[in-house]
Length: 305
Image (cartoon, rainbow, N blue to C red; front, side, top):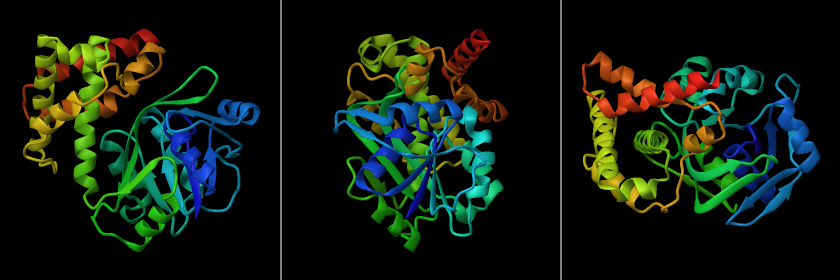
């Protein structure tokens, strides 16, 4: 199976690297700067699950090559529009597009651009970052990638992808309810990224401080209310489940958005929190914590200019 990984950063570099390490036919579509870096140092993964240095196949947007069976889209939301243009020539009749972006809005765009039959659901849970030398640093036991047909069907193509993804040092898992999983992940990541960037702290100090925990719980409830208003497929007891999940996280766990802020990089404010806030405002739902988080992120973005 020919696999194209769009981006060789903290997410694409890790999961694509694990597939390459196993021996799968993996190509990375990257920008010029990352291409030079990978050619000089190789794809370096430093992980609690084992370190590895790989020599990947690399292409730049526009280079001619054969089509791919799977395109794994692992870019940030602010690079999403450019990524769509970059992959267009590599999408063949049987190509499956597997996006790993946070949130939901990107699915609508991909379906519009390439057709619903080509787009499956996907998400990941991983604490990883790209350091100054371009190494992928993966620092916790969790390294899960979940995918599945948006219909819930265990289709022939899903089983083929599952076979290709099996036997790696990462956790690849098929879901029969990827739509629910996507919304649950959206709730989790928007809550976690929002609270950690607002309070400029890992999750441990936030949840152990009485007022910090109260804000965390209120934010969860606000987002759940917005999601329920549009009939998102979330569990009835999702607030309790999410708080239990957050309580199980490591004390010093940071979100990728928080790490990006610490590096003075762009953040996904509009794609994650802005999307939810717009729904809330259209439907006159009171979400003061969510609004404060979005405002905080937009002020930060203006300081980058």
